[in-house]
Image (cartoon, rainbow over all chains, first blue to last red; front, side, top):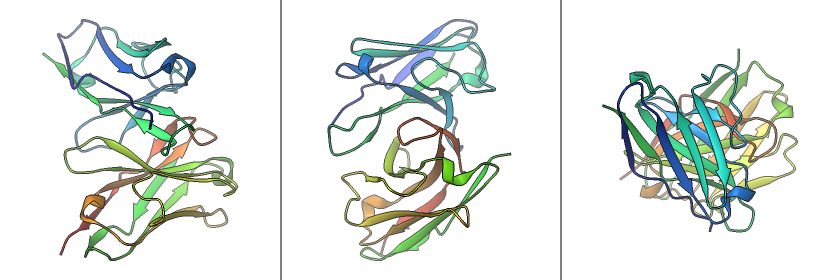
Length: 109
Length: 120
């Protein structure tokens, strides 16, 4: 089954840039979606198809995807951005069609 | 306003069954695939199952295939997850989610989740 690998944690000071990676074999050939989940809340889609933002998501959130790594970038990080971030892809080659990364906890110092 | 409301969670013994429902409003239900995702306590997100808008395609995680059945009633705007032969490892919060269009296109709206506890 396809595997997505995320760092368990990312730390950044307010106002700085956070980059959260998502590694997978030839992930650049897939559409990657990103979700933000604050404690006790449901996930929220923050990027779809690698880099598109749903309505209401700040422009500070951007994404890229190439080769074996997709990246969620959050510019000018704010305390409210502290959350778990999950990447997701669709993969029809294995037993599971929808794959989530293990999640990365973003800590705003 | 898009709304999704899960119900049906609770405590069930191993080997038992439970039926989760997700009532939706605020969008044309039949035009969108729907997905169930679960999250065990303190763990990450785990995809469970997805169904196309017309119910012609259903997809299951290997961990639940043969035990869980996803269905939908487009006339009642309701998504269903029938869970049989439940195991302790099925204990989780179960979220229903609206897909942007087809399965795998990303889930743009989520319910608040319903807790399923499998324990004797």
